[in-house]
Image (cartoon, rainbow, N blue to C red):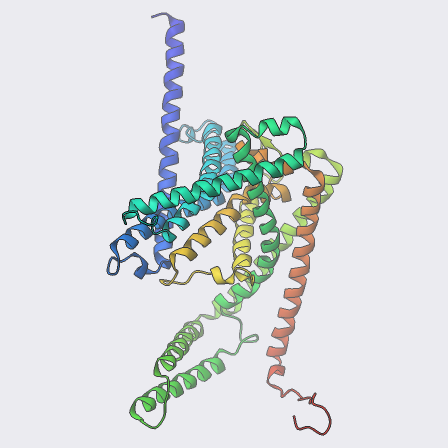
Length: 488
């Protein structure tokens, strides 16, 4: 064999081994995420929906739908980790460029992960989740033999009709927007135009949803953190709350025992027991907080509040600075690239510290968006409950989390939280090149976050000061609004 053929064979062999290694790494990462999501969904699912005591067929259908939900949730978690993993990989390659043990971490692997997340997000949103919902609601066509396959046939037909309806709507909308012969001709290419355009619309919806949920979540994080941590003695009197709760528990226990032994009073014992369990749970939580150390009480709460305030302020400052960049430099616009050149330059002017701060801000914004999503009045009903969440609500939660998480890379790059350009098909969205949309989005986020934060912090400080000085115990004057001559 000639030396040139040997070199070509060695190159092909190396490319083959690299491809196999990337496939193994991707499979291991997704398997880990799938197992983690399985435990998460198992913690919230309603066990009566998956037992074969009533109907073995319904239980099998629910288990199949649960597997699809676990897959979707794993894809959503992968979309959340996608941008932080890429930023950390770039910094690791910058710090250790010639290290043998990190040669597997390269641009080809990162680009493949971005493409897989994009593909699985499309697959889950457009096919898997609608199939899971229609599959649980189907019963088979009238006159057909009952069974799982009958449900599969009905679900497939319904999903096909829905797909044709959605694609037709996308075709009409894009033809109206494009309004030229070239755009209409390109619409016949399903894979190259239809699905990316449809996912672009879904991504735009997710980014707009993040715009509404994240500012509200950033302000709500202070309230949520205050409930989880023990406040200092100045802001909270745990002894009084604990004594009141113990008194309520004793009174409720007496009412339950008296209601059982008395035949003269018609008391709803089941309702009283539910109230008793709620009061007892509240008393146990207060006892755990009462046993907290002085360090947790006097140092943990202020540090947590200062940390949240610092992260929120840094996010707003970065967005404001990005607004100025948009006005002065076209390079600040979000764009997509097809080749991931990692390990050449840092994506932050502060080096590794700036990259770490970007990762922390991305996770913080994602957590805040989820908190804001479940705290908003429109989506409170979707909040899952431990061991009592029906399957339809699990499907709704998986779809919502996937929409939010798949828009997170575009959201972070549009706001200027990171300089890491969008890889693969994430950068092909049509609206990313529109200056007015990006500029209004940044200004809207900064304005809404500042407004929500000022309102929430001012009200929280006012409430804590009123409680600290004991003004909330003062009797309020009663005003009568009834007409003269009539008793109130």
